[in-house]
Length: 329
Image (cartoon, rainbow, N blue to C red):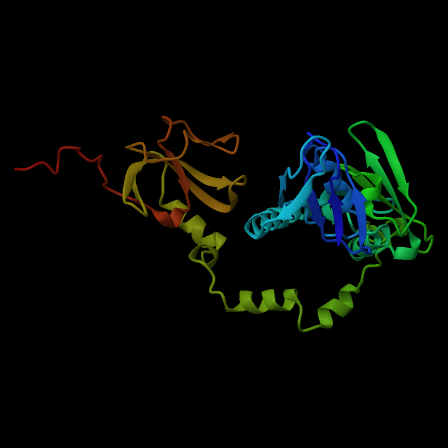
């Protein structure tokens, strides 16, 4: 128990401060207004893992006159109240006893992360926390503290026994890890540069012999997929269909029974192998004006042109529809 007690000074407010500490019992005299020195006391007692409860829990009573001596009398209710306040202050200090540092590494160029550290954690404890994140052993690690905002190196954290708070780090400071081991796994880019990793290679012949490859799976699936109608129609069959389709013929195109006039019959290499039929629709149901992929196959108004396979076109008596033909009679 550490106590501060006022003594024998008239006209000065005297108070008693009680603190719980890990040190041995001792007594300190104080001859000023304790309230003015609260922050100083807190900082002094909050060192070396000491949980400090500073309380101002006694009421001062003047019991003599002139150059009288002040005595202190405790009151239980007031003591309980102030002890509670002291505990709350201790909890608040504990929350403020940490700092967020940006950590970088000498060997890992992409390693750049924010980590929260307790100010009471020793430098050795900081290193132990970092090796799990970057792979550098505690014995091979040297730490440097930087304030990048001022482009200034604050300190070398060379004493493993000192707490991190000894070096006065602030949120946003950079903690740089220097790997002193020349044989470290992180040296030479081995944890970042994938080009340094030896790749497994297999010859084409050996790959074709395997039955569990994607290539075999694709061949199996393809063999079970029925050919499309387009694939079934041979080049000869398309040519026979086109023989009955003449430019200028009225036609109807499926799907949708779209009517129009045949404007083109022949091959269109930019669209794919085989034969194609270009149609100018009566209504703006098309996709272009006869030009596809930079090649003009015929002329028609915008959005009236379409090019389809010949099996989608039927020629015959397909007059242009009267827009009023479905009106009531």
